[in-house]
Image (cartoon, rainbow, N blue to C red; front, side):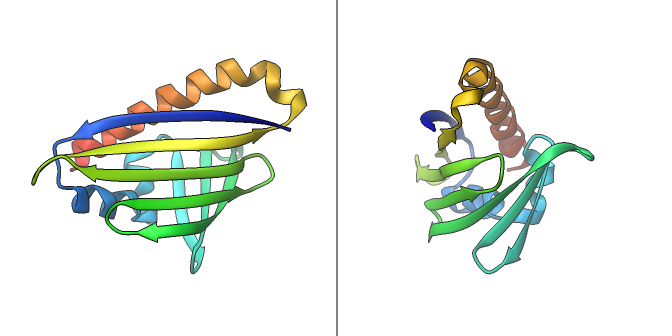
Length: 137
């Protein structure tokens, strides 16, 4: 197992409270997060399916820190995605904020050769998702 990191940030023209509320509205993820449907399966438990069925993967998560309107942290507990993730929302004035989306992923040794491509794709898709989030706000 090898630890790898991915992160993106974006300034949004929206109050931090509004951005955080939409980010943590799990059923609305499909509106802004690339090809992802998410739902709360139990208190503090999230299941997110990314892809077009049957071609995709299930990412299960446990919320480990929830401090509205600034921080949500999760442990990825699925078969494919393991590690930790965090979204931080920082006010940048009354009608603006910065969103930082960061992941610390446990990559199995056999997948390391694919990491550069997977990293580039995940960063590209995370930026695209944050732009869609901004358009909804």
